[in-house]
Image (tube, rainbow, N blue to C red; front, side):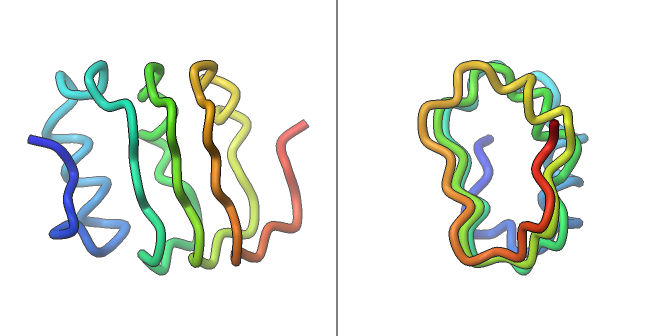
Length: 88
């Protein structure tokens, strides 16, 4: 199963990702916009084939250094967050 609009909270997203580790390779696009996230779920770093990541309209203040694992990323939307620090 793919994440859907039914996943509304950070905890629901993390729970889905932990229950579906075999699905990581197949996920190419993930939209976590408007989820009131304050941080990026660390499990996102395992989505090594991810091409599109939308995180707009959340409350994210910084990104983990593990974001560098997303080498296939082509579209990355962070608009309307509270980013104060980017990984070095």
